[in-house]
Length: 200
Image 1 (cartoon, rainbow, N blue to C red):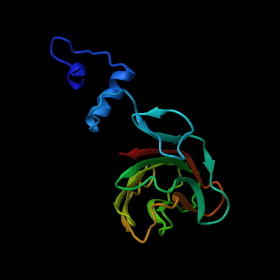
Image 2 (image 1 turned 180 degrees about the vertical axis):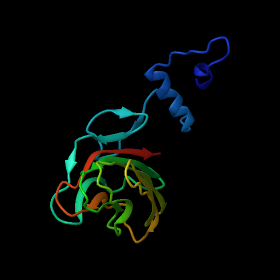
Image 3 (image 1 turned 60 degrees about the vertical axis):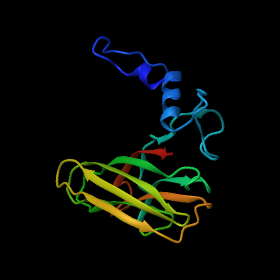
């Protein structure tokens, strides 16, 4: 199947159907029965259907509430989803902007009740865009590694990297990926999106 969709010099463009892609992905992940089915969604992610890859996207804008720190978007991983026999982890991407004022602001991320880790720090009086990408990988039945990198746009760019081992977790329990901010006033920070990809 894989060979059927590889391009060659005499045929540089190949049309690939959804069914062909699903089967190719199954073969890459070691399925030997040839069934053209996707990887089932784990419990808690969707009510119907299967797909070869799983991505959850929250594109609604969220203004930071009052207080500091203040929670932004979050994602709850249902209990039992992470583990060697299920999914080995997930990738995430978050984005948004800062209010055009002189207030100091930061973007933080935490997982499973860990301490908040700063990814972006802003001091510029501009409406900078910010972005954080990262992942959570399972290390054992009780531990994961959280890594993330944050960047921002114009003004005084500041980026931060996170590489944090989180232990004493119970992966059979629901665990939360939480974005938050520090700020001076409500709406100093806007989060526009949060996307999640599970890693088989």
